[in-house]
Length: 253
Length: 253
DNA sequence: CGATGGGGTGACACTCGGTCTCAGACCGGT
DNA sequence: ACCGGTCTGAGACCGAGTGTCACCCCATCG
Image 1 (cartoon, protein in one colour):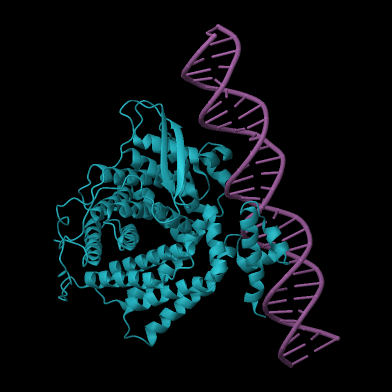
Image 2: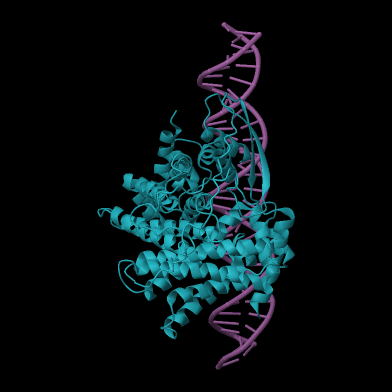
């Protein structure tokens, strides 16, 4: 059980070996030996030598997606911009809650360009999740697309910048700076959407108590020639939406 | 002479082979043979099998950096935000000026995840160049860093979004949309930079004029316990398994 | 109780991207 | 003719990643 726990061994071993003797100088076989698994098992579990470094981001991304999905359902009155910032804060807190791993990884990234590139890919997944969420939640109109893309990108970029600042100086509490920066971004986005839009933004509280328009049933994948996907999966009696979604993804992958 | 010219042969050969018989199915040796060069020469010139697809971006990035550097010197009076948008426009025009290559590459990216990841890295280089430029040009202060990072990220993200729209429909002229979007971003950034700035927001236009049609999400999962779930969702062409899974979950929830 | 079947594992062979070394070709300068 | 630098092809080499097969553990079922 708890495969996550067992996984940590190989992840730690990998990061430790990478930092100590260099990324290129470390072979997958060495990592596998250090973790007492076979080379084949290593690839089966982590996919690649690069991915093992970001193993925890797999679950974290899931958490973020779940958070946004819940926000979409239950908290449909909430400001979408605030919700995205909440999700970003979740990522930030994840790093802060495990400084050892995050700092070790950061030190490693400084030395290995290949891993920096890989981190970009990881980061981009969050940006995509944010963008998709915003497209479905921001008021429709000609500015929807630009606003969604821009806000998601700026939130991720600012988050990363401040996270890096924290990684260099883990003593300082960066949460205030993060909140301030997110506040700036929200105000800017609200103002940009504002002229043609409705209410004056009170800046401090969520804009207008009015409920935004609910999500369109399935039209949350705009842009692109729509294609219809028919998925048929089995589900347990007590399967949640998440479970079904996972089954679909696994089936497709 | 004109190594660029000779390079095009291998680049074209690579893209052509990739699209025709698949990326993984194509070996570097085949590309080298098609371009009448040796395998070793291929790696010396293009670095890797992935990089050959984005060979033109090397020079393009140089152009962008030069443009920004010139702007930094001679045009020190120009608005930095406008200059960054000019640089982004340069990238956009580059694609528009060679629709064949750009579209072929885009079609290829739809099929090859590894190349999509690589494109991210390429794109990020522009973002970095923008960020560095803005950090040096925007007024100093606590908001400098956030503003620089956020604006660079949003410009790149919006540029990419509109570029992708153009790639799907190369007939339409996307320049107006691009300029409009950049204008939105600049206004938003300028307003955020000067929260105390008094320039009147043209919010004078009557608010609340927009009509919103409430649409209830279709919870079409029977209240009973399904053993088999049939999900029908729309998905963009470039939708990943994750995207589809997300759409399924959203539809269920 | 033994049979069965599925999931996870190790062992191993294999492909191929990418690096390195070496030898030769070309070329301008002296 | 000689030399120094650059570019090239040839080939050896390493290691990441894949695919296959046999094995084992364990849960289910006749």
